[in-house]
Image (tube, rainbow, N blue to C red; front, top):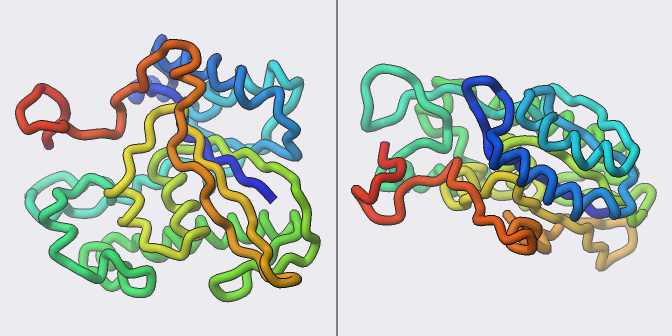
Length: 242
């Protein structure tokens, strides 16, 4: 089985839609995805994800199942260096979250006091349980840290979602802390991450990433990837530093 986890295109967060750049990105994405042989499509209920999916679905003559659990994983937590408004889990300073080795651990990240106070572990479990229930319907049943290949297949499923929720899905497939992906990857708008099952013993499958955050469809069209979701490369160069 192959899974395509796609972040929405360049967002207009104020209106939960896409910018003009995002619309161009979504059109380029459709050129890439629509010709593929896809078993089923799934999409977040939020407008920016649905607008990203729309050109692909229209070109392929398909529809997508709307899944509430694919919505942005925007569980608010208090950032260690700030007083006041809560932030999302992937918006911490590196020197703060890396000070707690538990946040690097698949088994222990949820023990962090800020994660506990925000109920992040329970929210993560709600998403991954629904994800696993869906995969089970397509023949792959979660069994510990692996999947039981009850009905092995080469179907392709596509998920249009968000940076936060996409990292939740990927961390679950790779059995790693979501903080490693939330903080350690820069998934550009409209990027495609691909996971493929690997079955080296009968009935025992694991998902392996063949690409993460791929934006080759943008480069093919001569477009530069958007910056949303990233911070400055050099302090004070005018990009996000907060």
